[in-house]
Image 1 (tube, rainbow, N blue to C red):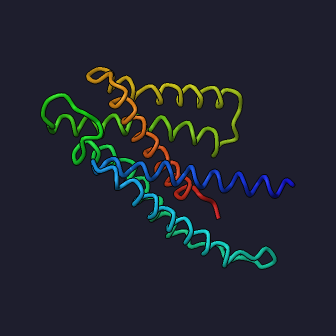
Image 2 (cartoon, helix red, strand yellow; image 1 turned 90 degrees about the vertical axis):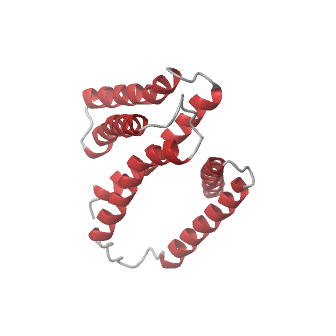
Length: 190
């Protein structure tokens, strides 16, 4: 029975993951792109599951992955985390900006992204890659709380609509996902 619940939880998690990623279709400004993104991410997840299941044998000694690939993909994901807000501000109208887009707005997007990511990465590092003491845990959770307030505070200074604040938090979730995946690949110990 536990295996059945585990499988059900996996299916629900994958479905939620695909649903969240498919909302990226909103960035294009066309709602019909959401199902196309959902189809694309469903195919990618299915391919990954197929490849993993095909190579999964518990009785064999598996050759560890090449650490260079982990470092390269980790760097790419980390760079994508830094550039995502810049791309969203520059190329889309997902986050409504006051006035014209300027170099200052793009520069501020990069600076606030680096501060946000620095706090999140420091918190993840304290919780996952050090032997966490009570002080480390408190500091990490404090960093997460402060970092999670940054996107809302920045957007609420010029746009207090649900669309503006919700959009910036959606972009923040993508940034955290990319940064955490990149960090895990960069700091992985084989």
